[in-house]
Length: 287
Image 1: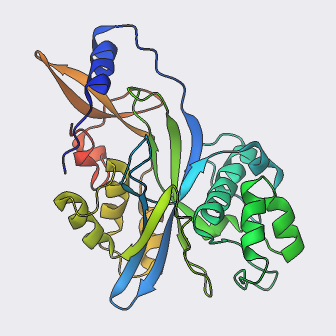
Image 2: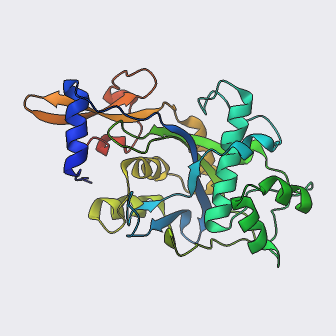
């Protein structure tokens, strides 16, 4: 898979390498959720197609997710979120990152990753659309309380961590979490920013990314590649638990008169060796 960078990003990359005047913004904490289900032929992953009218990543396939909101800190979760694997030193931040994934998934595709006291999945009803709108307006806490639902920390497992390259004007520090699609719910896209959804075996999605059938950014492909050998949702959670998670970021380097790209630890700047790179991330430096 090869990604062609627009000229203005190449100029910023040169400024970073050569000490120019581009000052990258700090990335915002964010969460994205990899929805999983057991299909007829094995594991399937939900991919969303972004509108071609969007200024950032038009037409690419993504997982649901978005930036942390202050309201995400106000909702308690059951259990303890894995702060180490989420790169969150404060327990409150770890919990909020999990909740951000739940909130964004409900907002974007109408899937609510919460359960009743006896462990049953949230059940759609006549108030579902109104609750989805309420969650988008910061009211997820009220929705969960009224429905008697709880978000369990261990129902969403960290699998990867990527940071938007410093050449971008809009940057995110993104934690990727896997979650099982709840029984009785369906993916419902909004038709504006997200125009379609498709369930695919991870290996099929990776092949589609490489052929151009399913264009996607390198972090999405890397996560799908990591899941490509998993045969079921349970196996996918095992894969997530086995991953060595570091905050990965493509960074420009000088290669003679040209630019090259390497993967670095976004927090320390350390260049990753090939042995440290997760499956699928070898394409992240393409330009």
